[in-house]
Every structure is written in structure tokens, then in C-alpha cells.
Amino acid sequence: MHQRHVERCILAEQQGYDAIVNSCVSDPGLFEMRSVVDIPVTGCFESATHLAATMGARWSVVTVEEVVAKRFDKLLVDFYGVRQSMASIRHIGIRASQLYPEITPTEEVARRVIEVSRKCIEEDGARSSSPVVRSCPRFSPGTSSRILWRSSALR
Image (cartoon, rainbow, N blue to C red):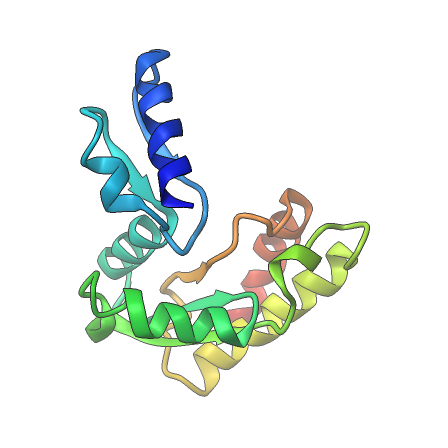
């Protein structure tokens, strides 16, 4: 799978793209991609967690399902050096492939993200003024706007 990412990265650079964002939050092939092009390449998890670490004292990650939360904790948190400022990693219990509005209603996804985010603050020590990193690009735009609108209830 990483080979496909690398090939697409090379093609993007040849087509004149200025930068590449690996939109899979597990950051697959990120370092392989960086090694073959001269344009910036970043990954969602790396970027989001480093940004969160600069914005707040204690922050959390909310992801899709337990297996993904465990993968992030085992493979990426220490690798990116963000464990010290991270309060927790929690999941909403929905597979990424089920996050499409026609499969799981946007309102249900938003409800779960808000519920889990609240637990990050109340039980794990995440600061309400710090970011909660949502770790799946498939959280729909509708879900994002509902979460932002309701996040004021977390503060």
C-alpha cells in the first residue's frame, strides 16, 4: 500500500503540486513519501497532534474505533513525541467505513464525538480550553459544524 502512496506523491510533484497532505490519519507511508519528493509532505495525525501540543497543556484524541485508538497509542504517540502533553485517546465506537451520512446519521456521529470529548475533559484531564483532535477525515462537514456549534457546551 505504501508503494501506491509513494507513486501518487511523485505524480503530484510532477504535476506541480506545492505540498501533499496524507489524509489517512494513521499517516501510512509518510516517511517513504517524504523521501522521494522535494515538496512538503505532512500527515494528519502528525500535524494535528503537534499543533494541539502547542495550543494547550493537556489535549486528547478522539478516533473511530478501539483498534485504531490502540494503533495510535502504540505506534504514533511516542514516535511523534507528544505523549507528555496528551491526556488520552478515546474512540466513538464506529468504524471509519461506517461514517458516511447514509450509513450512520450525522447527528449520531456528532453526539458520540461530543460525548467522548466530554469524557476526555471530565475523566482524563484534558483542558476544556485545549483542542480535542478528531482523528478521522471522514467526520463529515455536517458533523464538524455540529461539533463546533455544540463544543461550547464542553467549556
